[in-house]
Image 1 (tube, helix red, strand yellow):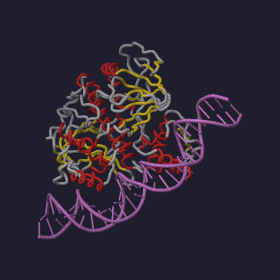
Image 2 (cartoon, chains in turn yellow, blue, purple, orange):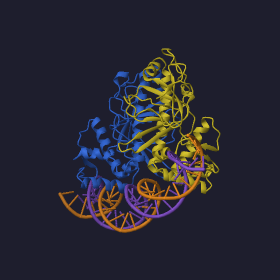
Image 3 (cartoon, chains in turn purple, yellow, blue, green):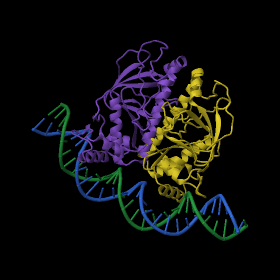
Image 4 (spheres, rainbow over the protein chains, first blue to last red):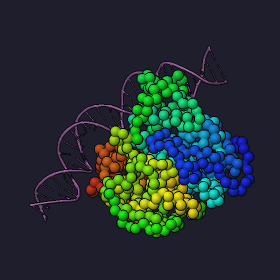
Length: 247
Length: 247
DNA sequence: CGCCAGATTGATACACATCAATTCTCGTGG
DNA sequence: CCACGAGAATTGATGTGTATCAATCTGGCG
């Protein structure tokens, strides 16, 4: 299963360190720009957070599981996904360090969470979060901020799945990942695709063959470099952005 | 434009009447069941809410507008939509009385809101909401609850757009609308499609022709009755549910 | 060095889009 | 109350983007 790598401190109701809790400290990103699931700069940890480690492709929780905790990615990448009875899969988000997931007011999780790469994840029980919110209203604001960003990202994704062509989806995907990686401190101009073609396909509502064809077509056109299957160079970012246009 | 039909009372920081603010009063709907954008039973009104009236197809606000207020549908139906530069449209939600929209922590709205039918809508300024949340932590909880339900609904919608066939999308759509109408007190077993085929198509990521063909195909198969283009009878709900399967 | 999962590439199929007429439906005015 | 007209819906013929099926290639690893 998983290993607890940090001790769960017993501090009863410690305040969470949150950014963007004051109204004037709102997220300034413009609409239409790469919309990442919101990050909370402060960590859970130092309070009642346990840090868990998951192997590649290990499941963090399943859709339908009781929603008794909330999580934050510390390192690695996490995917959120939904499955149909007959095995079709839709990945609703790829999460990077700082991104939170699993919070819901419903009884059960409406999607499962899996580690794309080896990943470390902080976990805080829902009970503690509710305690925290009672004590510290700013914490509720932080969550609200996070979830509303995630909702905006989901809406972008809906437009992508409902109305964009395969080429547009790929271009958008590459640029979105790139922006988020940059925001997380990675160097711009290049991108490592840590997920495989099936993951990309299931995120974009395509097949692995179409993903592969589109990537290689972009490579042939000189829009991107693709020295290995998982290393993308943005040789002509402008042209890519024109392809991903929309909104 | 629009008419203010109710006066904006000047009560400075009145508490909002919210349901589901206590942890034990959580939404009990099971996962996978028709997931409507969350409703808050209590109204904005009695506080700083103005009730506005919009005509059919009138815009409530545009994507990109400054997000300075939050809204709740009082009567009629509202659609949320996003557009691409070249006019492709994705409707992200149809909202019924009780549903809230427009809350975000971002500077601007990430989708526009339009009246599908003539609609009455309550509007509360963001400043007032933030005041209210500072004063009344339960209100923040109510918003959190609402948005997390909307996020779950968006995830269902992603699976629909990314991985379901036209017939499955239509079946799901009809059943979802029906469940929500029932939850709002309408009679079960039948459904009035107040939106036109273009709206349905733009919600489901299809064309009007495909929507029409699928509906009439279901009619021919005896799955639904369709006496007029906008009145659906659920003659064999079980078979429809099997079609909409998933999750 | 050879295996093998993942990626690529090719040939073909098909679901849905597109283009193009009709045919309804319902509001309006005689 | 009925005829009219126009927008909406339906239906048909055809096109096409992506899926599917089927090899083949590649690169990391034992």
